[in-house]
Image (cartoon, rainbow, N blue to C red; front, side, top):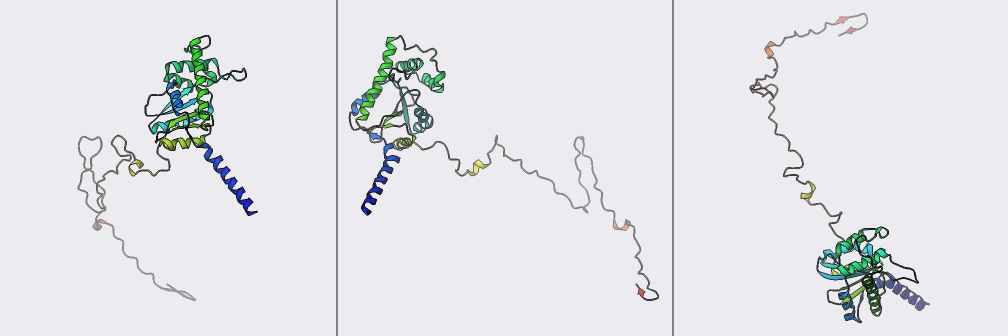
Length: 293
């Protein structure tokens, strides 16, 4: 019975390790590395041109996880010197039902042909239902642009096939990069729990900016504005003379052209004070039953 319990605990521990940790780790591409790299080099990716180590993000327009990854992780990767290269494709029809709009296919074809980064930024900043691809040539009815859209679909299909042979679970965004040792790695990163492994692999920070809990430096507690202290200094007041001291000074009167003397009322001399004669003590009087003083 102890052996059975031990096997159950070991199985539960292995399942927990796989479910919460192992299955989110990136996969090192061990087969067809040259062909995978060739596909990435020949694809028409778009980038802001910041330069640095390349990290490829393969996705389609309506992928919610890809939007979250771009919003939360791209800035961290850029801080580590990583250049993010986006490869967009239009999903093929599923059982006769289209999974992409005409505006999406037109935009994908334009991005593959021109690699227009400002166009990509406008597209991502506009809700998918509101994007009309105004000013972009339509792919429908244009054999060349339709062929470009199909080329993007074949790229995604072939890349997914090669990655599956190395054990990659396909989900979007599909991210590929090379680690510090030069090995090609891939991740189907629909789950955000896999993103930390990419940051660790390329040396990207977990968060940007200073922590709010960090102690404030002494110089930052009272900032100086325009070279002046934040609070006015206490004014230097003249010494106030004693009450009994004679007033020999001159006090300036505001608004007067000259200095006018001002006298402080003084206590009259003791010789001029009126004197009161001392009061005599009361004389004792005797009543019938007591003597009162």
